Amino acid sequence: MNGRIHSIETSGMVDGPGIRYVIFTQGCLLRCQYCHNPDSWDRDGGEIRSVSSLVTDIKKYWPYMKHSNGGVTVSGGEPLLQIDFLIELFKQLKENGIHTTIDSSGGCFSSHQAFQDKLDELLQYTDLVLLDLKHIDDKKHKHLTGMTNKHILEFAKMLSNKNVPVWIRHVLVPGISDDTEDLKQLSSFINTLENVKKVEVLPYHKMGVYKWKELGLSYPLEGVEPPDDAKTAEAKRILQLH
Image 1 (spheres, rainbow, N blue to C red):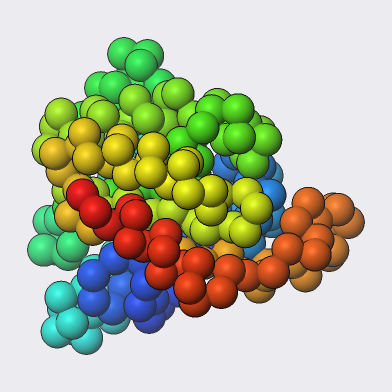
Image 2: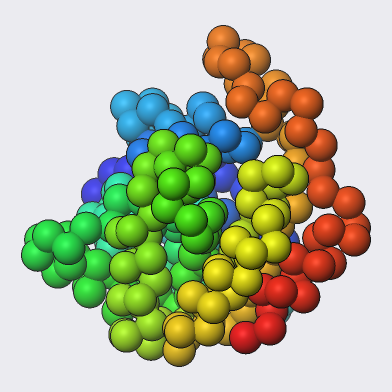
């Protein structure tokens, strides 16, 4: 089984517990205005890698990842777009006792039975989901990402119903996703979920702006600066009251 891979980070510290081998998959349906990997959008791009070659490489790093209670995180792009590849990869990782995490925006979640069947199988081999909830207001979500949030919220509810451990992540962008009432509504939604182990507020940053320029794309958040510490602390206070 092969997958399209954007890049690999062998010592990730922020995408799940412990030290992590992070695989960034190629392809995404969302077009987030703050995306720091716009070069991952194209589903036909990236490097073709086999599951076996990745598992062989991961085993080199496993001793120190294990010592930190870490493991493997598959991020993107959107990893669920390559769900067959993910099933085979996670199946082999669990056979080797390695902790598995998916970092997803849920953008391709579907109620179609074929997708649901594959997702059920994948979740058998998944220890943790990092779920990005980008905006609770559907109209603002469409403006921010180009896509409705309805199926993404359904994805969150499904994970709750199946009691899959989840860390919720929210990127805080001044003037875009930091409105107090929106944050309160997002907090209320999170409170309806039974499986949330952690809520993370990720301050907007500009580290990916150069990629937009390299791709010849106009950066939508030109002039927007990262939130200050006080605004970030207030968002954490609101969202972590669950």
